[in-house]
Amino acid sequence: MAQHLEGDWLELATAGGSTIRVLKAAHPRARRLRLTVTPKGARVSYPHGTHPAQVSAFLRSHADWLEQKLDELNLIVKPLPPLRVGYPTDFPLRGETATLDWAEGPYPRIEPGADGLTLVIPRPHTRALPIARGLLASHLEAQIRRDVSRWLTGYVPQLGLAPTSLRIRPMKSLWGSLDTRDRINLDLALALAPPAALRYVLAHELCHLKVRNHSPRFWAQVENLFPDWRVQRDWLRQHGAILKAELDRLVADVAD
Image (cartoon, rainbow, N blue to C red; front, side):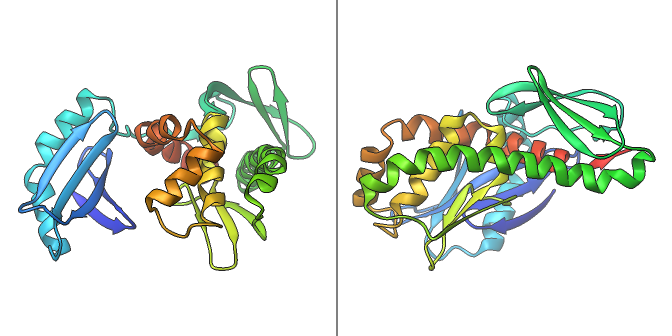
């Protein structure tokens, strides 16, 4: 079982090809390492000063138990089959199941439809696949920008502050961030989530314009801006890993 640390998450790649994401958190009153699994996901807590190698060794020793418990809750990301040109496939889009279909045409483009998206590419298919990935990424980014621009018109007057710019890209672990120049970054995978989940992440990052930490004052600001934040945060915790895997399949792992 391989692992790597990034941010507040530990990602474990099992021998079977599954990915387990474990939230790691130092606890001021913790006396020992503790692993818990709930419908929200897996969490390992440990005393301050614990060496990362100890955390990794602890998880390895509980790997079988962790995999079994997460599998019972359907929280392990199963390996996804690669996309194949000419073969329709289902994928999440704005929280609903959509179909990605294929067609041939003189130039690459995406045609939205009632049931999903049709990716039109010319022959030879292998030469058009990098363009196809870019088309999918651009389409998903455009959807996020349309939603965000609509919501900002209501949020900015409430806050009295506005971000300097918006950047949308695939993010390994985070859903969003606010940098020191007040630029908001959002994960491209949020285009696959229900709009309410995207709206929560936007509200979260906007509130960091006023409060740069996660203190009670910050969460009170989030509550005022987006009262449904707990439901959407929990939804992302439960479904986030599969969304990120689906995005990778759509924009990075297209295969002929």
